[in-house]
Image (cartoon, rainbow, N blue to C red; front, side):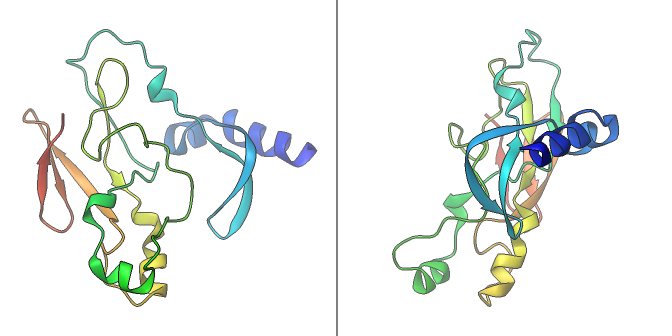
Length: 154
């Protein structure tokens, strides 16, 4: 639609928006995220990154990486049949602490902190649905999450 085209131009041709939240593309099926149905979504550019130099690390945020291994048992008391957080999982091919891309040279440190409102809405403490922000410790390539836990990026 014309609105989709306007949204894509507004995002993809604005260098500040591209730097802070990435490129977007049309999706085949609309999905619910951020309180509304969406027909455009973030582009998974890290899977196309062809940099052969894996010694240069690119650190990104904003993409709501999932850390479902850290989901609280309390969540399954509320949702016994399972729970899927808002938005599309852009990293479903990767473990929670895997480096991204063919060269394993990209790391996303945002573990869906933007959807902590879902935890609050269910009366759950922060981190209950695997939400965290991380800081990357270099040169060790350890991620330290805001709850104090850490893991080696592989």
